[in-house]
Every structure is written in C-alpha cells, then in structure tokens.
Amino acid sequence: MVELKNKRVLVVGLGKSGLAAAHFLKERGARVTVSDARPAMLIAELSELLDQGFMVEAGSHGLLTFRRQDLIVVSPGVPMSTPVLSQVRAMGAHIIGELELGAQFLQGEMIAVTGSNGKTTTTALLGEILKAAGRPTLVGGNIGLPVTAMVADSTAETWSAIEVSSFQLETVETFSPRVAVVLNITPDHLDRHGSFEAYAAAKARITEFQTAENFLVLNGEDKETQMIAAKTKAQVYWFSARRPIKQGAFVYGESIVFVAREGAKAEPVMPVVEIPLAGAHNVENVLAAVCAARVAGVPCEVIRAAVRCFKAVEHRLEFVREVDGVRYFNDSKATNVDATVKAIEAFGGGIHLILGGKDKDSNYAVLAPMLRERVKTVITIGSAAEKIARQLDGVVKIESAETLERAMAFARGAAVAGDTVLLAPACASFDQFENYEQRGRVFKDLVQGLGSGSRD
Image (cartoon, rainbow, N blue to C red; front, side, top):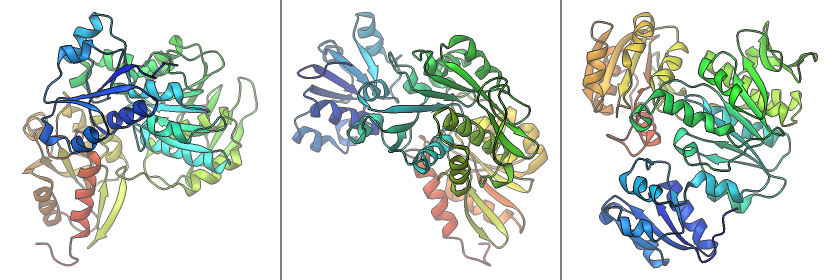
C-alpha cells in the first residue's frame, strides 16, 4: 500500500476520477497538486479546489511541476503517451492510475469486469446478485463511483463489483481482484492505444497480478479472450452460449447451467427465457455473471431471482417510448462498432439507425452485412459522419443530419408503425457532448417531446 501522508502527489486530469482521487489523497494527508490541460475558465471546480487548499496548474502540463512529485496519479482520460508523462516516466517517476490507487485501499473482495462490450451491464448485474445474496455491496469503477470514492464505505465484509476499462488497466501495478471477468475483446479505442494488439494487451492486465487463489472468467467463444488463459496464474472458468463447458457456465437446451469443476455434475441455474434483457449478447453477459457469482459462492437460486428482477442499464438498449407504433431505443453506450452490431442484432429489422460522433479509428464497413439485412436508413451525426458515409457507400440509404436533433426529426418523418429508431452511434460522444450519458439523455428528451399523431 502506497504511503501518502506528507507526500507530494500530483493528480493529472480533473474529470470525475481525477477529482475523486485528489480529495481522497488530501484526506490522507498528501500535499496535492492537480494539473489539467484545459484553460482555467473551463474548469468548473477551480474556485472550490483553490479554497480547499489544492495547488492547481491549468492550461498546460509543466515539466517542472511533474518532476517535483513523489507520486503521480493519472486519470483514465489522460494517455500515458502524453509527452510530459513520457518524459518523467523515463526519469523514474512513480506513476499510477486512480484505479490502482483506490484498489490498494479498498477493503473486502473485488469482482472486476472488463471487455469491449457488455461490462456495464454485467457489472451492474453482479452488484444486484451480490446484494440479493445479503452481502454488503459496492458498485463502481468505470461506472458510477470512482474506486477512490468507494473506499470510505468499504469494510472487510464488502464485495465490490468494479467495471474496469483498458485506460484504467494501463496503469495498474498490484491490482488483483478476487474474481476477474473478461467478456470479449474487439477493436476499440485504437486512436488511444495505437493498435489492436496494444488494446488487447491492456485488457489482459486485469489478471496480471492475480494468484492461484483467484478466479478468472473468460469467454469460450472469443479468440482474443481465450488467449489470456495462457497468461494467468488464476483458476480459469469459462462461459459459452453455444456449447457445453467443462468448467463454467453454458446454455444447455433452453437453460443456463454451471459446472463447478471438471467432471462435476451440472447445476441448473435458470431458463434462458427468464432473462429480461434483449439481445443474444445479454445471454452472454448473464452467463459471465452466473460464472463469477458462483465462484464467489452465491447460490444458484439467489442468482436466478436477481437476474429475473434485473432492469436494463441506462443507455444500454434502453427502451424509451413507443409513438405511433414506432419504438425508440437508446443505446448511447454503444461507442464502438461491435457494440452497434450487437444492438442491431437485437431487432429483426425495420431499423432507422443513428450513427456517428467522434471517430476512434474504427472500421465502419464491418457493419455492412447487418445493415443490408436489418436497417432501412442510417442517419449520421457528428465529426465521423463523412467517414461513415464513405465506408458504407452503396450499402444502405444514408442521410446526413449533423446533429442529434436533426437526426431525430428525420427519423420521425421516415419511420412507420412497426419500425424501430435506434441510437447506437459506434463512436465516442466528445465532439458534441460531454459524454455518452449526456448524449443518451438528449436523445431521450427528444423522444419524450414527440407528439403522437404528428410527423412534423
């Protein structure tokens, strides 16, 4: 555990995680400086931070500021390739992320979930399962509370369900969850990591410091995920919706079953039809949660009851409203191409798909087969619109709307009874919105504002 009292600590990046880390450090006696590349006028918390005694550097990252520290804590949104970080790391600076900092102080047991898609739903579901089992439970990480903000409420009896991203895993050095889950690994954040191989390697770090007493849950149908099995010391469990598994969770007939160890009798968990979430990908998410919960000692009947009561996570294939026979779904958290494919797969056809935002060096041509089969119109928004239109030219009708408001106006006029309007952008949101949550809320507000009977 890192010593903090009277240490000079720099927090880089003042997003939600950075602010939580700064307050956490100050409460433990550290001498905290915060550094953010944004101009001072754009940092809403600036006056409050100064009043509370923080040293604040705004508008740039100064090398001298970075060199004066005993420890540097980096927010997930700040790339380790940032020039000043590269410089001081070469000089031997101790650099960790907010996840690593918080995890060193978090009491109790951790179940950590990563993957290109499905990690928010799976993490939230695990939180509900653990609560249903009567365990003191915290949920956070890349969703909800940053890990440093969870520490104060944790005890030796606490179980924490933590969503972790590739950005967070880049900077771990001791992080060792009791149960680690890797749902899938498909191309994402290539603009940040530089290559798919680097991205996959960051995901694999979730198990780097696990021991033989820990558990690793992997997708038996995902090639990149399977490769992690050779890199771990943990006990490996698998999940599959397609075939029997020797040790783990799988679909057998019309039911989910779990095998505790190779050669053991399969335990019935629940019928697949009882899963309240749309889409085949959510069957996989439930299988992963079943596997993680069982190795954590939660009984099958408790898991079944929790899954049956679970409601979709906000911004994840979230049904908003039906107007004049047209259904509107918010999947703003579909921030990569694979997530959008999974969203489209959840519907039979008649889709008017809103795509676009900030490009992450993605290949939108991958969408072509699904678009031909199920999508009537693609409506593009944001800075990626031109690239999307170029890569999907001739595949499906494409309308350029630029903004979400104009996209909704077009969709309202084009959709007929039985159709679906789906926001599943396959892009980040930062060109027009603060985050995917704001994008989703704006979409929902626009849907709620639609008047029945009027197509204007």
